[in-house]
Length: 205
Image (cartoon, rainbow, N blue to C red; front, side, top):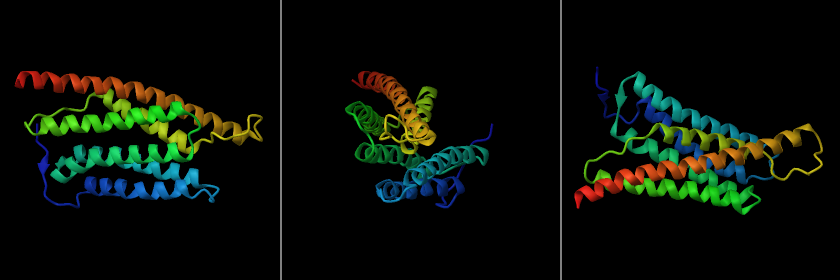
């Protein structure tokens, strides 16, 4: 089995997709805050969806082209966390109507910071903490949750003015459900990573 080729260039296609994902983050931020624009939610949802696709394709192309780079290994997980954390914070500020959603978003953000700290600690001992399949499902649930929350409308009149109001409100409710699922997976995978790290710490002692 051939090993991935080490490359030094900053401009490999997978890396370019990672750069694009990072650059889209401030664009989503600005669009969500442009409340005067009628279609700002839909534009932001499109941008977030596009950013999510770059996450899939940079990994796919890295495997397909058998390319790895240190800059890619460094930036890819950071780009994912920046995207999720930034958009969740903006959503809490602009769209959430209850404390429950804020708590769920906080759980996700705190877990990402905590796991990043564990990875940095283990990295000092040249020990890797591989991404589990359940963690990938967690990420998928997060992306669906955020997409639906951006697209949906939590402020629709309870009597529903038309079908679109009814549809966008239910999309928002679906987003809350996915956020709840993502939070459960977030806690569970965080516990798995913590167990691995603490076991290593005990062995070191």
